[in-house]
Length: 157
Image (tube, rainbow, N blue to C red):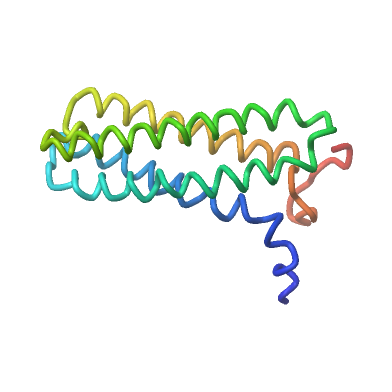
């Protein structure tokens, strides 16, 4: 029952990545909704802050998780996901830094129409990043140690 403890280093990326996906995605959704409900702005800011900094361990664990695939034909597919993740992490840190700076000046960038457009683009990015990660798992069986008996999977992967 406790065999999973031995595989935690291999499973760290899929465990950690769900935090920034949920926190940032929900932050961007609340930012868009704060156009109509201004009380959601503070929650959006908090989720953005926590979600952006949770990108760092998720990205580092992703870089570590791709090492076993360096010499395989899957490297090209993995690198697309990796590039989206690293660029997304850097972008999120810039966004949270810009929003922090604007809030310190008493002019929250998160309340502007430009930020809401950025939030909509961010929702698309989160979807693409999650989609490529899901594709790596479900289409290419990256980091899958067993076959689910309920799913008919061809053995040629």
